[in-house]
Image (tube, rainbow over all chains, first blue to last red):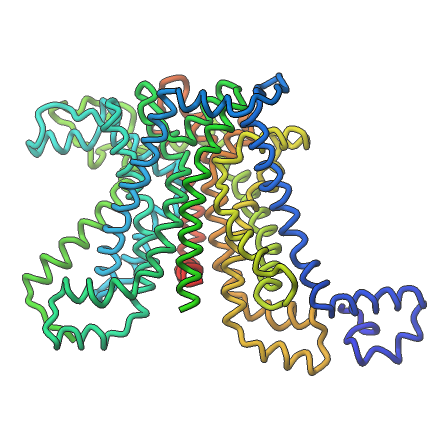
Length: 322
Length: 283
């Protein structure tokens, strides 16, 4: 395009005669083709479609094949139908993992939404140092999950937990709390860490939503005698709903398919009681080398994710239609 | 404005906000304190009488020194940086072109293609890692940075396409039409008129992509095996825990140093980051 002779589609015509014929006509056909909307779209979309096809669509198809076969490391395997899924269904650890994933996603999302909304409402007010507080609140979301989860694991450490120390010194407990050494406790600890990490994302996006709401609406509502809670429930919340739906769906997908947090915090233990689908699939598929069974376990995430995305797409379409 | 009483402001504003700030930042403070405490102070029973866990009397840089000398931590930092930069570059290039095509051009299947790029969110990395490991091995890419550089775009491209598509839609069409009347080609109008205007959008997508690839864990865990090839999150997990022993001082020093680059990038561009975050949500 930068070639001064062949540049600019219309003006270049008289000069082109001076160029070697083949090159000029090649150049002209290329610019001509790029003027064609369909051809240009094809050119622009090819790299994206190639990468996504090669590293998402193809492995996805392969994953489905794996899940239906008895493949393992060093053994190509053969078609076994739904055997892997039946085996998973009869596996008590799989059931625990599925249940844990649901509990983890449900509660973590609720906490993130409630706390994130509260924080957004607080940050929406005027106070000194607002910018720095806002910026620092996003830190948990920026810092790599693995690294911050290590800090939490150290805080929950069975022998040297600072939380136990604080509670003991302030007189709330007389003996250590079994943060990560008891299955139920450990799952709730994971929910706390996930909430800590994801809440800033909720807060900042909801804050952006809050800032688009006209303050006149609030003043009108308070003149009509609405108190703080009513103003939130009847004015703020309905206007925030579209943003909330997008953020919640995004968070559900991330939380439901989470791997790194559990991998670092509990490793699925104690006694396989805190596995999520992703960590269990890793244990079976990578650590034990049973590729087929591992692929089947991770495919079990798909129906849930599908329903969530489908609801979101429908909701957004309805909004656009309205 | 609404007027409120002083005690109300304390109960409903200052106290909750302080709790939020303390809760958010405490783990980072804890990382720092742990990283600079000598081992003797670190591993002291929580019931010991003179235990003061919230600060240290003899700060030391010993853990940082160990991290730099006894492990390949500087290598990990470089690997993570290199992989994050290149995969962000690839994703931005693809996202720019695809986003422009989806926002501006009319062609058959445009809607379906847009939806299917969006729906790739349905297939998170944790669903694909087992077959992908096989593909990476077949392509002879195992244990090379290219395994990650080529796979990270799978979750970065949909995101940046989506974000940039939204951004392009906010740029008035007339700008392009003027350029075309002045003799610019369609392609020229895109690269010389629209892309420069979209720089803030590109920046926010870039920062987002950079932090996401810095944060990625499962692909790096599976595709890389030799210690000097690893990224920071994987290196910290696999080299600073030996058997059942956690080297907490070094771990926290590593966590701190591994967080600083992303925190720096973020602090310089925080405004873009926030607008990008909110822009993408508004669609």
